[in-house]
Length: 125
Image: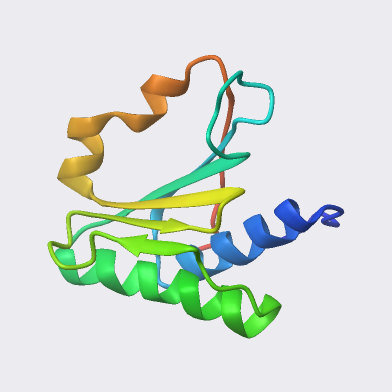
């Protein structure tokens, strides 16, 4: 993370992105919902993997990195059994990890057209 994070949500966002990037999560996207009326969270983070195993591993990586770096545990983790869509809920930051095909099918980014949407550029190792 190149920028200096200033709020607890930004620090958590940085940890989430690191957890996704460490296991080569694809097309990492942050949806800033802070200015969207009636949004259930401040941020959504969306990424995908190319296999059911990678989806599960990405979700576990986010949990581990957030715990190791910040001592933060999610309020809820759902969807790990099917490997198609996992949701890691940190309340202010909700992480959606899709299987590639499911991400295309659901088009979650398109539902939040009035939000600020930012793609994260990852560094290839």
